[in-house]
Length: 415
Image (cartoon, rainbow, N blue to C red):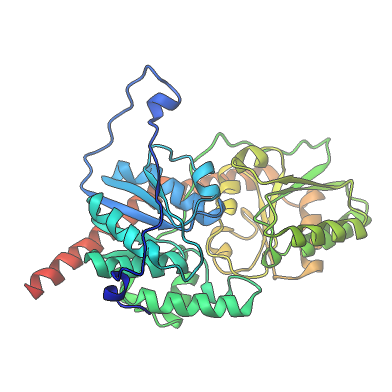
């Protein structure tokens, strides 16, 4: 890895930075109203994010920007590239600086992030991916600021591309050695990071959280069952297994449809899924909605959520959103998912890749062998008790203050 001195070399020419000014809630929704003043900001955090997508991890970043000011934490974003995050985020009152990182090895952005951190008067940095962790670690060296790393999924098995996983895992292992704290989103991810060499004493588990919604059971007993799957569709999400299981359930005479919510990771993979659907004779039973900025609006159109992931889940936001909406969840025993779904109480769990098990679980739901209203009520209660966005923001703010307190102690010891 390059040294901080190397990063200051003249060869790293400054790339352009696009600043997206904040829009206050008052001007965006109620132009004549005065927004309620948040608590006094006692610290300021620069979140370093990738910016390409707007999926689960990005929704966490967005919700933190909305919730942290209520915990006394000012927030700004440094987005390494311009992408969907800037277009889709709800936290439009949070300053966003869009950088131009032209590849994973383009380290010119490190100087820009360091400059933004200093000019913005930020107290620490918060990174969310291996790439942003590398940038934050180097910028922290240049500025002397502490930084926090948020682990959203197991990097070593985040995709089906082994080389990419290996490279990202090595970058992450190098970067986190200098992190003041690591935040994991589930106990299983804590164990994963410890197994990867991260000191357990640096790790704090903060469960993901989502806002409460006006939840009520959706299923019409006289209508067909509509299952929903929400994802950035890619191989590890297991959509093929769900399509196979859906074909089996329909072949047994059950009137079940699927609403597939989200975009495809690549056009080629999208064509593959469409071909697979057609080969199974499911063209009339599956609706592909494409990318959406409002998954809750789509969840209101389904009776249950299915998440057939094969691997690589941290604590899926869509599972928490389904619970908040009162939807039972059928999912796989995949890492952090098991932390959210209470089997037999708020949903059902099957093994990853188990077509027959998934078919049986869907059949159990649609043949009324489960108490759907009770499962819906328990889902709402479980979300409120364990997975609120307010608790997530409060616990992250506590990690910040802990990291800053330790940093101040270390600085005092050196002086």
